Structure formats: structure tokens, C-alpha cells
Length: 451
Ligand SMILES: Cc1cc2nc3c(=O)[nH]c(=O)nc-3n(C[C@H](O)[C@H](O)[C@H](O)COP(=O)(O)OP(=O)(O)OC[C@H]3O[C@@H](n4cnc5c(N)ncnc54)[C@H](O)[C@@H]3O)c2cc1C
Image (cartoon, rainbow, N blue to C red; front, side):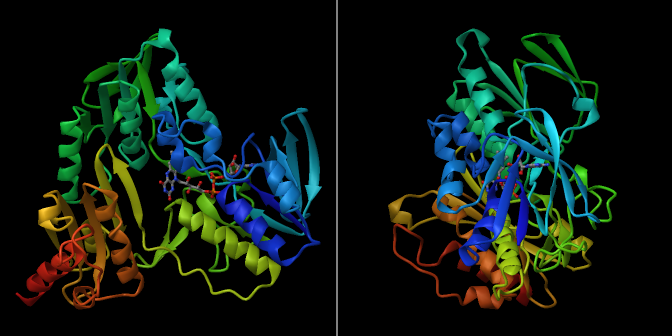
């Protein structure tokens, strides 16, 4: 069997390794267009902040280990630039030699991930514009920030999603105090946003929300001007663009592969695409959302790892359960605030036709005599069926934010508010109040249902 994997990170290597665990003699090759494999992009903000000192700490497996221990050849700096699904042939560009060659496959696994999105109004060639999507970006940015004669005193971030927000801490840690974040809105769609805004304010971060960037101009080699759609403008010493990610699937366009309109590949629950012998996993695919009941683009690491492993197991002939999809869980740290969400927002619930209700509570994160810090829990639920539909948390520590996992589990198990109320959650003073904030929120939701 001859298997080709495109992409050497979470999804691609999970797939290749799952096959190797079962078939020791199958030929499995991984093609990777960059110089790194098996890297944790999630650690990039903490590398830029220097919490993580060495870039290589973000790497789990080197090509040498993958080749030696797993017997999987990794072709670094080899980019797949075209595919012919009929003849099962790939065209590959060897970036080392700048030569092209063809490669056939019996089974193809597409794990090309995503790339940072840009847009025409942000197109400006300037050495002080940065993206933060891969290790090369991270290295370039940190080196630039650490170069003394660059004298960066201000930073603007376009995009107030979780990557933009996580990077605030990194710039602060690099001694930059004049920071502006610009976006149509922050990640949260509810009152939880107030906690986030308060956090930004307490760190003197300027947030420009509800406006779009209309143009960029390089004023000099050290200065960039950002024009907004209300005709205002700001200037900055350094600009980060984080307006989201898009599936890296350009080479598969118009070849009969089923995709969402943004290019995210559609698969079945065994990661099979509609093209025979072609599987796909990770940030390049759309995931089935169990609450929205449709495929959505929600690219995150846990799904990429699971989907990759599942694709590999299926190809290897192992009996596995189908992939159930996601419920939309994510967690991120914004300066000193720990944030998390799962399920759908009130807005989405209403769009889906639910007559949805919501509640927000503030509660001590741990027993009051251990400290008085508050966390917030926001719940969205359906008053007809009493089903939980979504949740958001903000908390002073990771302990509070990680409670989102209880609510994600409740969503997967299709629990009603009453089911959440009766959960047997752990208690001891350093961990939670005797009435865990999740139970308090469910009690308040239940009272609202009873009205
Ligand atoms: C700054 C940042 C922070 C993040 N933080 C979190 C977090 O906290 N939690 C979380 O869950 N997720 C986080 N993510 C998302 C997470 O990193 C991704 O979901 C995960 O890396 C997806 O893995 P993947 O293998 O599908 O894709 P990728 O990691 O994108 O890997 C795809 C690989 O394919 C290669 N490739 C692409 N096209 C080709 C081609 N044509 N030929 C050869 N090789 C190709 C790419 O070079 C890349 O190495 C973060 C991402 C970023 C950028």
C-alpha cells in the first residue's frame, strides 16, 4: 500500500502514525512545504512573550524521530502544488532544488491545515507587518521585537479573535504599552464581552470595535498608518494582522472535491471525501457541529488530532467509532482573564429558530474564605425542551475557565438544564465553592424556566 500524506503537523502526522501502528510494512510518505513538522502553533503567543524561551520547545517530533522510530519518511520543503485525482498523481515542488516531480498514490490524506487570512485592503508590503500563524512567523516577529534599534513603542492588531487577544500578553511582556486592537467585535457575542472589555481597559489596551480597516499606508520604513471606514486613522510602529484563518485548499479547487464556500473540505464521519481514496482531516476541513446540525469551519487542534488519527485508523482497517463532530468548544487567555466558550451563542440559537433564553451569573471561583475572585458563567438554553445550547465563561484563573469542559460534556450528552443542576461535581475549598458556579448557573436558568 502506498500512502501519501500532505502536511506534517497535527492532522497529517496523527494519520500517518495511526496507520504505522497497525501496518509496519506499508509505504507512508509525508510531504511538508515548510522546514518544521509537529509544531504547536498554540504556543506561539508564549514564545513571543518569552514564557517559552526556545522555539524548538514548541516542536514535539523532529523529522529524524518520525523517520527513525516510526519509519515514516518526511519530505521537508516539498510542496504539493497540483493534484490529478483521476490518475492519482501529485505534482511536487522541491523547494531545496527548485525542481518539480510527480508522485503517485494509492491513498491520499489531505492535511494541509490553514493559512492566515488576508484581504485586499490589508495588502501592503512593509517589513513591520506580521502574521502569526506558524513557527517561521513567530521567530521572525520575536527577533524583530528584540532588535534594539527597532524601538517598537506601539503595536496595532487587526482582528479581535482569540489569536489577536492572546498576543496582547506577548506584546506587553516585550515592554510595549501602547497597544490597539481593532475588530468588528470581540470573540464573545454576549454580556461576557463586558468582562473582556474591562480586562483590556485595566491593561490600558485600546479597543476599536465596530469599525473596519479600509486601507493601510506605509508612512516610512518604521511607521504604518491604518485608515478606518469611519475616516478616522491611527499610526503604529508595528502591525499584526490576525483576521482569521482559511483552509489551505487552493490546489484542490475546481477538481470535484466537495467543499464549503470558504474552501473547507467536506468529509463523512470517517474523514472520507467524495473522491475515492482521498481522505482529509484537520484545519483544511469543515467539521460537523452537533448543535448547529451542519458542517462549519471551526479549526482547532483537538479536532485536527482526532480527525487525523481517525482517518489513519480507518485506512489501516481498524474498527473505530465514527467521528461525532464538535460542539464548538474553545478556551483562551486574554492578559489575566481566562475565557472559554462552547455550543452556540444566543444570536445563533435565535437564527436557528429557538425561542432561546440566557442567564449570566457572577460567582466566587473558589470558596470565599480562600480568596474573593469572581468568575462569570453565561448559559444559553431552549425554554421548550430545556436543553442546554451554549455557554461562555470568564474567570480569574484556569481553574474556572476549564469548567467549560463540564458544559461541553453536557452539550455532547444533550443534557437539559435540570441534568446539569444535578451533576455531582467535585468540591473542596481551593477548587470551588460548595455550590460550583456551573450548578449555580444551572439553578438560575432553572428558575427562569419555571417562570
Ligand atoms: C497562533 C495560534 C494559536 C493557536 N492556539 C490554539 C489553541 O490554543 N487551541 C487550539 O485548539 N488550537 C489553536 N490553534 C490552532 C491549531 O494550531 C490548529 O488547529 C492545528 O495546528 C491544526 O493542525 P493541522 O495539522 O490541521 O494544520 P496545520 O497545523 O496548519 O498543519 C498543516 C501543515 O501542512 C503543510 N502544508 C500546507 N499545504 C501544503 C502543501 N501544499 N504541500 C505540503 N505541505 C503543505 C503546512 O506547512 C503545515 O505544516 C492556534 C493556531 C495559531 C496559529
